[in-house]
Image (cartoon, rainbow, N blue to C red; front, side, top):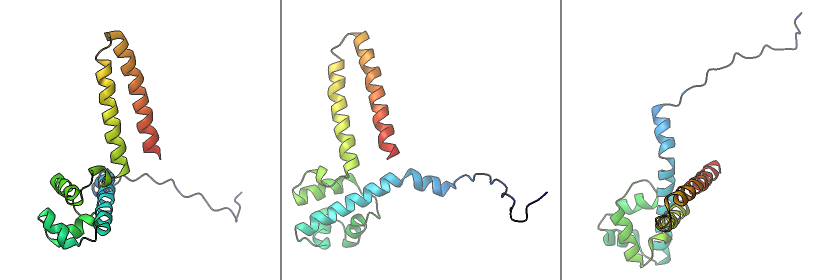
Length: 147
């Protein structure tokens, strides 16, 4: 006996696999977001110094259109440009880098200190510490990717 008010459930849909372009976009999303944040930070630093895009371009040995593209996060750029920007502004690169990259750099430095200390331990103690560290790093990475 069918109920005239009950509509049949739609057939389950098969999950679609993302296209190659969508997969690439997702893979490079953090890089794209980093470039946008770096660009905004460069624009802010330039503006605080009352410097024009043309003047910054001259300091970087690039044209104004390249500076515009960098500030808008629309282009990848050489690391030497970042160094030149920091020299032109007389600032530390950490003032331009995204917070995510600063955290990763700080973590890398701290891990290097820990590795140096571990090298002084006996083999069993070193292995126990490495397992504990691996667990902590894994938990850290998981907690930051979930957010």
